[in-house]
Amino acid sequence: MSITHTTIEGQFPGLNKIIAASKKHWSCYAKMKEEYGNIAQWSTKTFKHFEEPVHIHFVWHYKNAARDPDNMMAGQKFIMDALVHNGVIKDDTCKYIKSITHEFVKDKTDSVEISIKL
Image 1: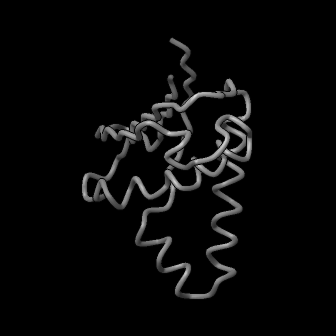
Image 2 (image 1 turned 90 degrees about the horizontal axis):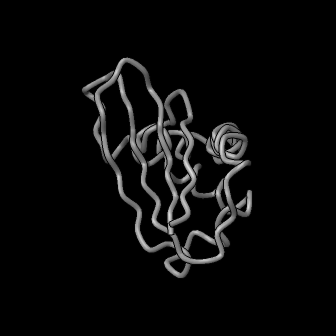
């Protein structure tokens, strides 16, 4: 079984921040997408490239227990787009993704682990 894994330090914006940015002005969301997209692209640039559909697993580490899991995991959009941009997966459609799972861990730092396997 082929697997690739990395950890991205820091916190991605939650869904509430993404919605607020897009309501403020289209360029606010575009700037956010570029900033966090670049972080995700850099962090996944050495990933193995998969030709077959994959399983993707996220482990969201967080310091603030008040964050909602569904809000927190909205950051996956930036990561999924980076995986496509880097050629790790051909597209982020159901044709190339078998499953996406999430795990949430109260921790001393904010980060997200990404694992991809066949």
